[in-house]
Image (cartoon, rainbow, N blue to C red; front, side, top):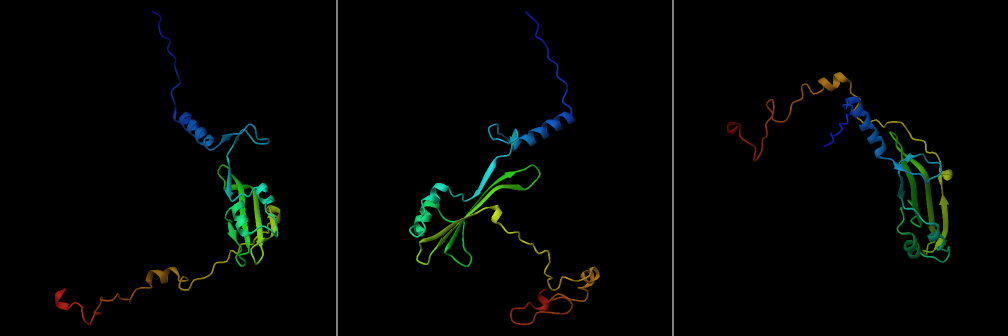
Length: 183
């Protein structure tokens, strides 16, 4: 009977184990995309967010003829309506991709605005993309709240001398108050 051959492996060291675990974790969120032009071998999956409107559905809406019910049947409920004018419906969508150790990156962004007349028929359909966006300046000021501008010493020693109700001779007097002898 032939003798079985013994295959020897190098013992797993903590460094090798850590490297293998790191490689598995790094590849866990990736997918193989060989057919996408310009994509690397490993890319995170694209995620559709919001309410994407198909061009075929938009082509079926005729300004001056289609009603709110027609638009809702073809496109569904809007993502938002106008803040000051409920005669404008917005359908907002974006395609994002997660990058390692970064926030979501927006690859495509689209807004479709459908404007209605006072009697509920479609007046206009507009499409907006990233090129139509306006930058918003974020204000970095902090509104001061009264009572929060105390120094450290005022915070530490501010309650010295103040007594809580019932402490230091203050007692409840009135109906239902406990008598001093029943304590």
